[in-house]
Image (cartoon, rainbow, N blue to C red; front, side, top):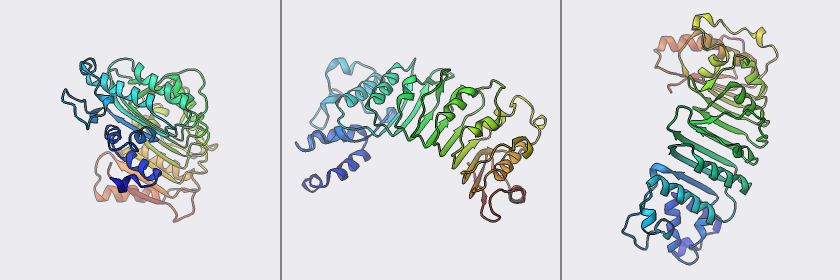
Length: 338
């Protein structure tokens, strides 16, 4: 332990960041020098399913933070989990650069609102990862305080809901946005993307029914919101949603480049499409990406089922012969199972 204590502070912080938060907190008993080191770690991860509730048997290895007497032991595990997060945030010293929260919410999620409000006041957060499973169909509704996190460079939202109608404050530093199972309006999604002027990486995985369609927006509007995009990964539903997804597949028609003459994805160098079914509209969309991306290097097609060799060969041949804005031979197109 003496050898570890003599390591540079930066290395010790890195070691503590690799530990679950409860284990990091328990290092406070190692020595006087270690007592408060864990309260300075810049990356905090709270995962409800990994949270261990202390029992009546307490020993020196248990941090007093988790061992308040009987009243706390009567609380539900979830309440103890939230209470532990609050206390960690209250005694934390220094900047918080990364914050991950993975949990279920039973009602409004007001506790999470308080956590986000606290983080917004710190004005240091660079990465936020929320994986919130709610009881309702729409999931946890994100509070407006989320848009006070102006320093964010990475934002990951899983199974959340966003229904704010008023304009958003810009995420002027955000370069990476991951949206999985987001419940929102199509117009709200466009406003969110428009509030990220330097966005470079977008992962948009919205399944059927999660985005309410106003029938006033198109795929053109979506691409206009992300002019700086370098990496784009989508499930195909997002495309069909913007192209009248309530129609049957054979009623949708093909993409024509003339319809989108005002769109050019100048910076896109990698594109992924997930849950690919080899439908005509999907193939046309990938061809559209090829024709509109002059610096494209990689196209990943991830089928929802495994294709046989003949089907794979047919798809790859069709795409390789399609008009391509990038120089001939510079784009790698590959198929890979999800």
